[in-house]
Image (cartoon, rainbow, N blue to C red; front, side, top):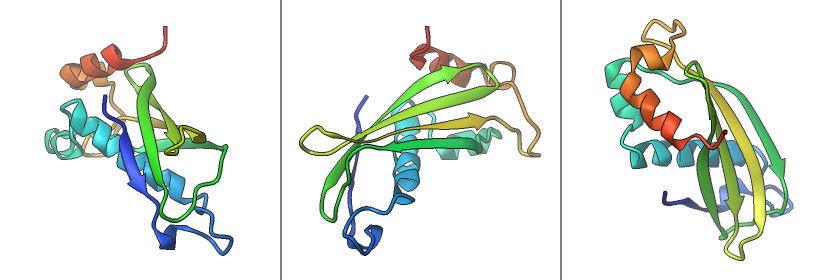
Length: 137
């Protein structure tokens, strides 16, 4: 899986010249969108078939600051998939290979009406791909 890269823009930094912590959530979403495209299930396709995946929790641990002009590399992996919930892990590193941030996002699945669904029942092809990528033993 190809890791996602993001160049830190000036507007993403704070008065101290460090990337504002809130931007890492955006980097996670960028990387998640890229990840889904790479596995053949882009957001557009999921929405077209009526599968939605809202974020229900986010957790970040900031390790090393990043600054304007730096490139951050985001590795995305499926930490756990239960059929009803999906936990995605993110490891962000800088060009020197130092960990900048480790994070997770947790998602449920809904239909067009916003009602919860079990992915294995409603979209088994997508569920099979996620199961194959899960790092949980």
